[in-house]
Image (cartoon, rainbow, N blue to C red; front, top):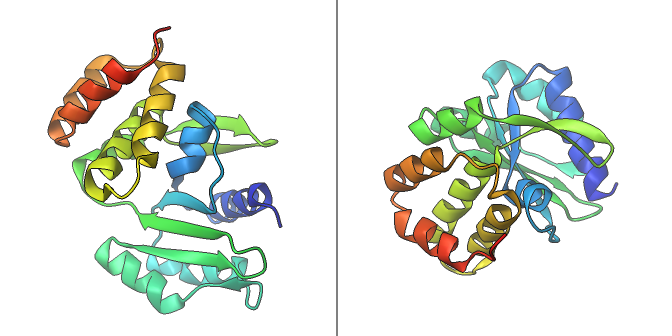
Length: 188
């Protein structure tokens, strides 16, 4: 199963189960900016306890590794769990939708994109930039999140909602990175 096939399987599982979701991370930034290789898929989900059996059934052992206890713990703590494709080594990180204002805002602004031969819900370019800047601030181990945000900005800058970006960059405490990103961006 290719990564695109895995993504399509994840999307079909969530949509067939009526589970709200949003593709984020490197997949979103690759669609909206500069494509790059990644071995994981990041998905924000609104999974409930009643969805656990369907998730487990969609990713059967031995092809996939997923732990029911980890799913329930993620739901309880608004954390994350993952599914690993044991054969290919790809990983899906399922991040629980939280009640944090930015999570609620970006989830409400998700958009439907067509890529890789199918449609799915993905974070808006603005929210992809903001999330990548937040990861850049928190992680610091690599420049990847910052560069991802920069490339999305460079590709999308003419259509971005700049007041929204200014507001949330301030609220998330990444206004210095947001300012630097605009300075670093290649002119149109």
